[in-house]
Length: 440
Picture 1: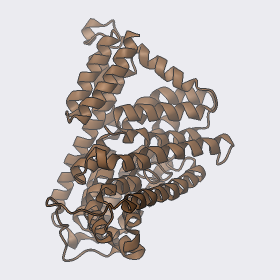
Picture 2 (picture 1 turned 90 degrees about the vertical axis):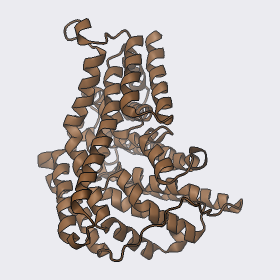
Picture 3 (picture 1 turned 135 degrees about the horizontal axis):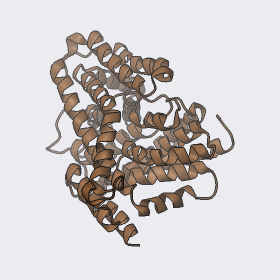
Picture 4 (picture 1 turned 120 degrees about the vertical axis):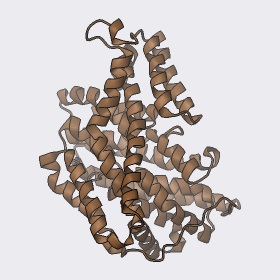
C-alpha cells in the first residue's frame, strides 16, 4: 500500500509541479526520488546489493538511454523545422493552403496547415509557432473566438497526423525498435482512423465555435497581440512542399533496411532540400540550424527527464502491479497495451516518453502471447497521442500559454476535447477493427 501511495503520489506531485511551472529537469528526478523512497529503493548503488535496483542507477539509465537512442532524430527534426521556418517555406505552404480553402473555413485552414507540416516531418512545437501568426490573422478576419486557436493548432498537429502510418514524427517510430515493425504498420486501419478523427474532430470544432458565437463570443483584440511580420518575398508554395515530400519518400525507401535510422537520413534530406531550393530566402541559415539544435537539446532533455522518472517507477513493485492490472483486462490484448501506454503518457505528459517507458515492458509480453505486431504498433502509437494532452503536458502548456497567450480555463476545454477525447475514440475504433481481423 505504501508503495502505491508513493507511486501515484509522486506522479500527482509531478503533474502539479509541472503545472506550477517548475522546471522538469528538477521536478522529475525529485519526484522519482519520492517514488523510490516510498517503495524502499536504495538511493545509491553502493547501498544496494550488486545488480539490484536503486534510484540513481535506474534514473540515469533511463535518462541517458533515451538520449542515446533518439537524440539524432530530435536534432534533425528540430533543425528541419527551423530551416523551413527561417526560409519562409512553412509560411508559404500555410498561406497557399488558406488561399485554396477560403476565409470562410478559417479554422479548417489552420488545421490543414498544421497537418501538412506535421506529416511532412516538421517538429510539433515549430508547427505551432509557425502557424499561430497566420491563425491569429485568420480568426481575426473571420471574427472567430480566439480561445479556439490552441485547439485548432493541437488538433491539426497531434491527432490524425502525428501517430498515423507513414508519419515521420517520432511517436510513429519508437514502436519499431521494440516490435520490429515499419512506420507503415497497420496502414489500412490507420487510414480509416485518421479519416474518422479528422472528420469527427473538425465537426466538433465547428460545433463548439458555432455554439460560442451564438452566445455572442467574437474575436477580441489585445494590446499584446504581435502582428505577423509580412515578408517581402516568400518562396513558391509548391516548391516549398518538396522538402516535405523528400522526408516522406526517403523514409519510405529506407525504413526496411535501416529501421529507425532511416528517419535521420530522411530529415537530413529534408534540411538539404530546403537549403538548395530556398537558399536565397533564408534570413540566417546558420542561426536557424543553431536554434534548431538548441531546441532539440531542450526538448530531448525534458523528455529524458521524464523517461528517467519512469526508469525508477518501473523498478518498483507498485508499478509492476499496476501494469499487470492493465494488461490483464479482459478482451483483446490490444486494449491493455493501448491503455498502459496512454496512462503512462498521460502521467508523464509525453507521448514519446510514455512509449519509451511502456514498450520495453509490454512488447515482449504481448509478442510472446502472439499479438500481431503491426496491430500493437498502431494501437499504442495512437493511444500515446491521447492522454499526453492532459493539462500538464509540455506541448499543451507551451501552446496554450506561451504561444497563444490564453488561459487553461478558456482554451483547454476545446483543446482537451480534440486532443484527448478524439484520439481515445480513434484508438477504440482501431482496436475494434484489428479485433475483427481488418488490415492484419
